[in-house]
Image 1 (cartoon, rainbow, N blue to C red):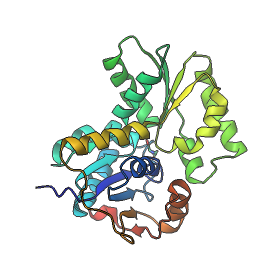
Image 2: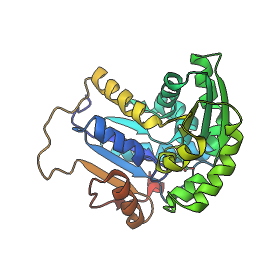
Image 3: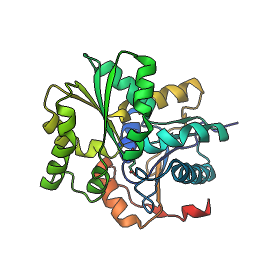
Image 4: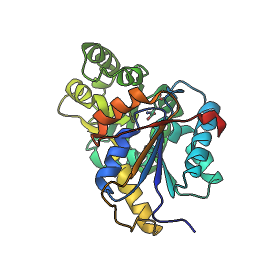
Length: 273
Ligand code: DGL
């Protein structure tokens, strides 16, 4: 039987999934979390389905060794390409970020015209259009791949003229489409939300799927009677972080994103899993 006090496993190709971790910490504060950021192999967005599935499978195997009770693929690209296949292979509840993002977008839009920005892989997969259309056949979706956003975020250029310039070029195509909702379909993008919001203007709601993902995770844990019931004690190490490359840069990021005071992140060889 699954231990309800076991941690939740969360993974991404790098630091982007921390935007989801932050929301989980906020909405389900008593839960323990094991995070894995595949910093040695980021970006996933330009890789093939086979590679992304192989990487995600290795990460899931690693998280299983940490005895997690549920797994969140906090990466749109992995959710788009690998989740369906891997959730059939593991005996653990798994959720991704795409379905929650779709729900959030549909409840935000008034005119049914939705923009989706993401990695090349996510946009090419058409997964957002597919799920949105399944729920709202009349919706009109415009996808735009923004491949340079991930390296800009990973380089820490969250507020920088270079990011502004690139965002203007990418988003110009969407501005003429009369969209009223823009899905940040990559977990790195909430970190440049301010820039994106400024360029899109006030009439466009920016949807960060992280909020809805944490809400769905909470519902899932409740439904499966997996909510952690033990109390945290002072000094408990509730949150553990693992990466596949050097941990220094990751820690600087992690501390500026979730402001929790992360003391360490361990480097592991993910190829062993
Ligand atoms: N943060 C990831 C996503 O949500 C992927 C970024 C990347 O590795 O290309 O798609």
